[in-house]
Amino acid sequence: MGKKKDELWSISTTVRSANRVMDFLRALAEMDGKPWTHDAQVEYQIRLIANRFYTPTDKGLSKRQCALLREIAEPISFEDAERIFWAKDYEDPAMRGRQSANPLKKLGLVRYASNEPIRITQAGHDLLDGKADFGDVLLEALLKFQYPNPAPEESKPGWCVKPFIAILRLIKAVNARCAATGRKPKGLTFMEFGIFALSLRDIHEVEATAERVVSFRKRQETLPETERPAFIQQYIDTHLSDFNNPRKNVHEYADNVIRYLRLTRYFYIRGRYDHACIDLESRRMAEINAILATDTGEPRAFISQQEWDEYIGTAGAYPLPFETLPALTRIATQIREEIQTLAIGIGRKAELPDMPDTTPMLKKHIAMLRDMRNQWQTLKIRFDSQHDVSHIDAVLQAFDDLLAHRRQRTRLSVELERLANLALNILDDATAIRPNAPLGDDNEPTFTAPSGVPDIECIYTGFVATCEVTMLTGRDQWYNEGQPVMRHLRAFEDKHPETPGYCIFVAPALHTDALNTFRFAVRYEYEGRPQRIIPLTIRQFADLLKVAKTRILAGAPLRHDELRALLDACVDLSAVDNSKAWLDQIKRALDAWHSTKQGKPA
Image (tube, rainbow, N blue to C red; front, side, top):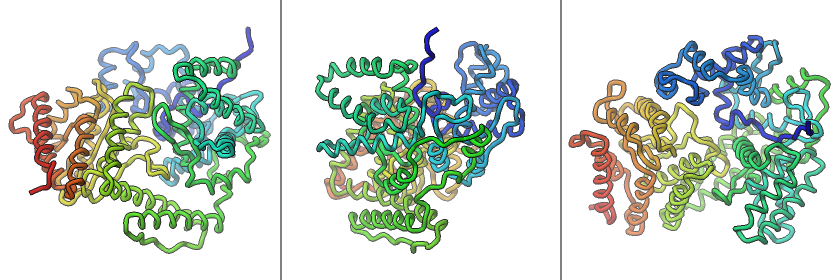
C-alpha cells in the first residue's frame, strides 16, 4: 500500500454554499444535548431532509418521494424524511450526518465527540439568536483555525500553518513582488489560488511560495493561449503529486474556499469568469495590516481537544488588534472621508452623525458607515449612468457576457443578482432599490440573497416591486422558484398594504411549469388575492436599459410611472388563456413600450 496522499485545504466539501451553514446549524440545534451516537448522526441527516436543508438525488427513491422532495410548499414529515433516507441505501449511513456536521464543528459553532452530548457553542448561539453577523463569526473562526489542531478529524501531519493568515500573507507578498517589477498587482487568479494557497502547508514557506506564483505566472504568459491548459495540468501533476486528486480539487476547493473568504469582507474579486482574481480588500487594509502585525500565522499549542474546542467555540477568544479606540477612530475617519468624496462626486453633501468616543459605539458606527458608503456608491452608479451612457453600455455588455458563460462553472447566480441590481438602479427614478444579498465593501454581493426574502426590493412613488432572478431554466425553475416567488411577493405586499405590488421575475429562459404557476396567481389568486408577476427573459430585462439609454441621450430619463405602465400591460390577461399566449402578450407589451418610449414622453 502506498503512502496516503494529502488533501488540499478546504473549509467544507459538504456544505459548499456558505449560506447553508445557518440552515445546517438550525437542524443540529434541534438535537442540542443529545449524545452524538451513530443513531444521532443518522437522525441529523434525516432532520436536514425533513427541514428541506438537504435534498438527496432521485436514485433509489419512489416517484412519490421524488415528487415530495420537489414540491417545496409541501412539508416533509420526519417519518417521510426517514423513509427517503433509508431508501438511498447508503454504504455508511451515519457518515452522512458526520460529514454534514463537520463544517459546523470546524467553524466552532458546535461541539461534540463520539457518544458525548451535542453542544451548540457560544458562537453558534450568537448566530442563531441574531446577535452576531455571519461574516464576523466566520472571520473569527478562520483567524483561529490552524493545523495542527487536536481535533482527530482535522489531523494533517506535517502542516504548520493558520491557513487564513497564510493566504493574507501570500496575496500580499505576490502583490508586492508585482509592484516592485512594474507589474499591476491583482492578487491570485483562481487557478493560482487552488494550486498555491490551498497547498501551503507551512507558514514559513509564504515568501518562497510567492516566488513560485510569480514564476508560474510569467511562464504561463509566455505561452500561446492554446498551450496554457497543458502547461497548467503538467504543473499540477508535478508540484501537487503528493495531494489527492489535484486536477479536480484545485478547481472545486478553490471555488468553495473563495466563497467563504468573500463573506469575511477581507477579500475582493477582480474581473469576471476566466479572468477572475481574488485580492485583498483595499478598504480593509488597516484591519488586515493590524492582524498581520500581531499574528505570524504560526499555530498555537493546545494541550487537549477540550482546550481547542473551548477556544474555537468561544466568541471573542481571538482579540482583534484593531479594536482599540485610536485604531477604530482612524478607520471611521477614513470611511467618513470616502462617503464625503462620493457625495461631492455627484454634487451633494453627506450628512453624517457625530463620531462616538467609546470602542463599542465606534464599532456600531463603523458598521453603519459601511452601509452608508454602499448606499452612496449606489447613488453614484445612477448619477454616472445619467451623465455618461458608456456605463449603461458596460452593463449591457455584462449581460451579454453572462449569457455567453451560462454553461460554465462560475458563480452566475451572484452575477445575475449584481446585474439586476445595477439595471434597476439605472433604469428610472426609483426611490430605493435594496438588494437582500450580503454586500462587500465594494457594494457587490458576496453571495446570493438568503432564503425567505426577495432577491431585490424596489420602492417607487405609488407602487412597490420585488425582483427575483435565477439561472435555472428546466423544470427545477418551477420547483425552486414557483412558490418562493409568490410567497415573497405576498409578504412584501403585506408590508406595504396601501401600495400596489409587482414582481419582476428574470431567468435565461422561462419554463412552462413556472409560467403556469405564475399565470394562475395573476389571473386568479395566490392565498386568496391575485398577484402581479411579470416573467421576463434576461435578454428582455436587459433590453429595458436600451430604452433608458436612448431617453438619457434625448434629455428625458425614464420615469417610474412609465415602468409601471409596462408592468400593468404585461399582467393584463383579459385576452390570455394559456402560458404561450401570455408570453406573446408580454412580447407585444415590450415591443409597444420600446417603440413609444424611445423619444421624449408626451
